[in-house]
Image (cartoon, rainbow, N blue to C red; front, side):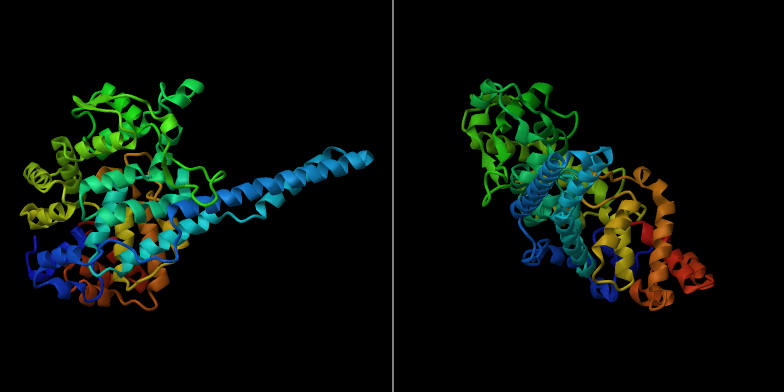
Length: 477
């Protein structure tokens, strides 16, 4: 493994950042570790200055209003056509009824769906932040935590980008406890994991209705977000925690034109009484009961180990070095879940620099690195999100609450699709981008002799660029 200054700088940019761009290797070669720490120490690191984007609640209301207008137009058109048919019975036949239905549908579709554009605007802000960042360590932490606490745009598209901006970005370098409370109380998470339909069986609403408890949010908090699967909790802990979380919901848009989509604690849905979780009794106290449980989960040793293992797997190796996991878990506990200190401990570790760059980049990381190397600082969100979907990692659309997998086995079968994307991108930029310039000036000659020879021997610029983008230097970190 090359240990020259340039090679270590390239490793830092790939392993912890979003890949080299022109001048970045030279800029950090003198002190790669210090440059990574400095990226975390920037004011408001990881946050986005996006005054034009709506809050999650505003986006939710906008889509709800459009849906209501669409339904109203469809009903109005259907009623008008029915009235016309009754007035002219001789003209009303099967074909006429079908035409009426088509006209009602067309009237509804005339109302644009704002959800898609909100999603694309949020995607563009995220993509541009990644392409424009000097190093990208803070941005990679955003991606990690957003996947750890994932939701899906397939279920709540309007809030998917705002959720990341509001609940994840402000806390990536703060206390884990604060991020945990922010994500679990965010309306997008409550909607995604069905807590909005969870009712305590002995609550006022539970007694008056037949619908009851939903365990999804409680289970995923314990299994995925904090303690880890099959760790120290039981099924009884899940049920009791689900009772604690009843009443955590969001205001419906139809009844709340000014505050629909915002978090609300509805006491009529909340299961009364004390609950015992992991052997500790939590007395009745409304929304504070749930916050108290989250506070203790954030500080639990099992949570420290689970988080340390996931961070190590994401940044260092599919098989996390046990000593590094133990060290990060200890830092997590000693600092009361200070995520900046945990990230700095990761960078300071010996394993972070001695483990060879053999970890396969996820599709989003690879595409971003490719465009950064090509000099891109902004992107068409439609094209970019379509590319990620083709590669099996559609933005904010994980297949389950577990998020996207972080191991090679889950992504290696997609190399054929990566080749197609590499050829497409190379064709688009070949006229202005010299592959030797990328090797010599962007990558500072840190690619292998084998890769360089393949690029030099290519029959065209497009082929040369595609070979470079498919090389181990681009695929692995």
